[in-house]
Image (cartoon, rainbow, N blue to C red):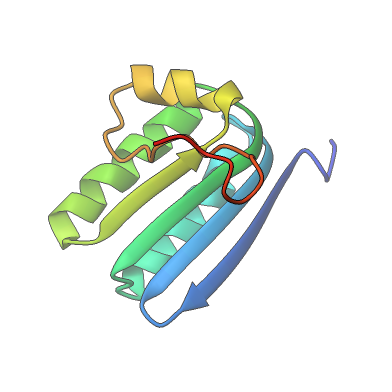
Length: 114
């Protein structure tokens, strides 16, 4: 049992909650994330953002968690966003999660193309 296998940090400002996940989101760790998400939604946040920039991998259990969250947010009128790195972006997109945000580039300020 590795304690650093999955870490979750949360931040709330006004009616917006950001949940930052690091490590492995799978059948052993998705319950922790689901509980945090449920608590945020029970508190009636208006915006929920999952930050998976430092997530190493996601499995079917993690994807099911995202689908449940997406459905509950739609039913509750909560803005739901998922920010993911390249490692987990593809399986999330392939699973049909529509709330996946545009990829972020770690380019220096002003060095982008539009």
